[in-house]
Length: 457
Ligand code: BGP
Image (cartoon, rainbow, N blue to C red; front, side):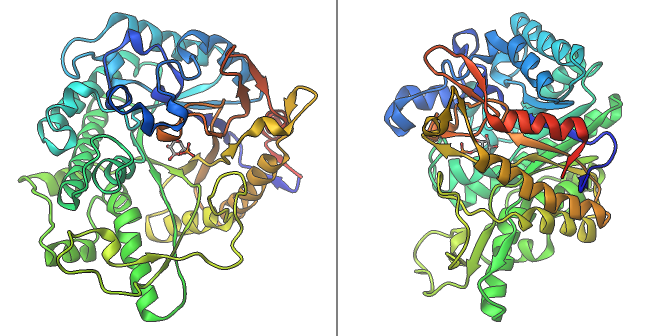
């Protein structure tokens, strides 16, 4: 094989509870159920999270399909609002049974379950107390984490605290694409900080009482400057501080970048901290890092200075830049830059102690994918190319000594995606939303060969 991967490489995919389970009538509300009830028209085609891909009822068939295409690992998330209806306190026995069954079914099929605790789905009961703005919610999270570890930790040995924790910060507190739709950088920074404290406390607890690995999943968007002009370089550096290093550094190094602290203090936007926080972060770094990679950021210096009377925003310091000639996914407006995956891994190797990592999400969203159906299946050669080109760069990173343990596609089957609902399809399997019938796409059979041969030509 031209591209062969290390022994025991993790081939699989990722999904999240809110996006796949459905059965919202059997759980308490999250911010998503609530937001959908109050503003359904903000969701693509007015479709909400009630049913999604019905994983709650169809997980057996789905896990069988995972096995059929060679998965040896699968990342799922637990719905906090399903497991603990009030956010704190008593667990729901039906939820325990459901997650037990899913985990056992995965193991029965030799698929190692990777379990994530928080994928954008704050229980409404806790959001009503201020969500991550409120430090008490950290204790609620640690209580939830402990219950999950106690209930499932005998079989689940790879845990993640948060998926893309920066997204609820951007969506909920800066750019209005998640509930609670607040635009306030000071709150955003507090929310980001509290998330990290909650993360570190869960890591501390896990290491004290359990024997597997625990990490975090971050969406890393390498920040490329328009030019080597010092102003562009500075803009790109600040963008990197805000959107990558604000979580990457505390998670892996146990501390925030000095220049981020300086910048926030200059603008009087440092979060409120408590005694002991710094030690907590320092002593509880991750064992494993999940990297979600979709697209890079192209950054340039601002053409105009921001209005000093406008509220502080990260975008005061940089502008996005549309690089001429960049390659775009024509089916969803995101840039495709495969080498980004390699740059991320080299950065982790050189600047983050070569932390053990894996690609926890990478994928290609496609609108109206049914137009590619031939003889009853979606011929997604574009997706095969997409995965292949990213895997080639990942392979190079591994050859150069990066500790990359696996590759997970986003996602196993088409699912509901936040405000975009079912607009962009990402799965190895397509899902007919009327019948819930699953059909393997061409990429599924290609991926089966790749995982079985542990590589490709
Ligand atoms: C990631 C999230 C996933 C998923 C994916 C695709 O950021 O972790 O939950 O939604 O993006 O995004 P979209 O469906 O908006 O194209």
